[in-house]
Amino acid sequence: MQHADFATSPTGALVSTEMGQWAFVPHPLPPYTLDYARLARPLSEAAEAIGELNGIGRTVRNPHLLIRPLQRREVISSSSMEGTYTTVDALLIAEAGGETVATPDTREVLNYSRALAEAIASLTDLPLSLRTLRDAHRTLLKDVGRGRGSTIRAGEFKQHQNFIGTHGKGIEAARFVPPPSKHTLECLDALERYWHHDDNGIDTLIDSALIHYQFETIHPFADGNGRVGRMLIILHLFMRNKLIQPLLYLSPVFEERKDEYIDRMFAVSRNGDWEGWIIFFLAVMRDSARNTITLAEQILSLQTGYRERLQRDYRSNNPLTVVDHLFELPIVSIPAVQKRLDVTYHTARTTVETLLKEKILEEIPNEANPRLFAARDIIDLISGKSSNARSSA
Ligand SMILES: Nc1ncnc2c1ncn2[C@@H]1O[C@H](COP(=O)(O)OP(=O)(O)O)[C@@H](O)[C@H]1O
Ligand SMILES: [Mg+2]
Image (cartoon, rainbow, N blue to C red):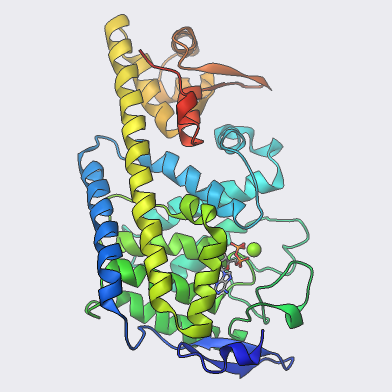
């Protein structure tokens, strides 16, 4: 990190690390001044899209039908931004019980999915705190091997200086060096106080951009800061009642604009370009909300199509019940259906056969024990392959 690049930064101060490098310590939020005239339009566009999304969140009968697919998209995208790759299919198979055969990357994404769901659920009983983030980090990096586990303590803030740079190069070549570990807590405490501040006069959506930047710049964990920081966005918005349901996830759009995402945060630290970052962040929010609205409409219309067909053609309610469940977990086994419906094995098998005949389910090859069945159209929607989805008519 070049001293000259940051020496005059209005957003933070340079301090020396144990090893004599320079590190950047951000000033506490909020920024002194923001050019609201530039922010007005991006803010109203994001707010409008989120308002529309909240309309869906309010009317949908079972919000989990939308939440679960969106969370899967989120964790796959957010992980892939950090070099951890899996597919919707692999993640779902792991979720359906094939965890032992999952690759290390898939297991890490499955951890992420659990961490995210747990963190959101925790907000029902507890306020959003640093503890929430440490718990999420613990679940995220639980049993993550690959030789990294030894240096990364799951659930603990960093003990050593970290840096953001090119893989395989040292701190000397780092593009950005976050605060030394001894500054981590004071920075985080200030951030936590900030997100609980009720009346700072700044719109919550703008706050969300400020808080995400601040968290990433503090970089409090040895690893996992990107993923935990992106969880913080939804947690903060949900806690602040900006979202009726946890339906807004930004990683798929961040992933498309990853270089800009990182450059804009870098520019806040280097030049104090808050507005550039906030405008970008609000555009990502707006586009994410719009994409989510489209996906929600597709999911709900697929579900309506299935329901109409099954209600018309079958007397039993079982296929219908299973179909609703498939939107939450699109890969099932016969024992899972049996448990879900609380029926005999025979009835569960008949129900699965009905859904196979209707081409709502298809058998996954090479998964014999137990046999697994996939709701292909639903999975294609989650994977973003909606144009391939077959008509449900
Ligand atoms: N210059 C920067 N300033 C602040 N944050 C940055 C900068 N460059 C990258 N980041 C953040 O750091 C994240 C990567 O940090 P890392 O701890 O490796 O996260 P993860 O393990 O989830 O991979 C990026 O996703 C981004 O959010
Ligand atoms: Mg990483």
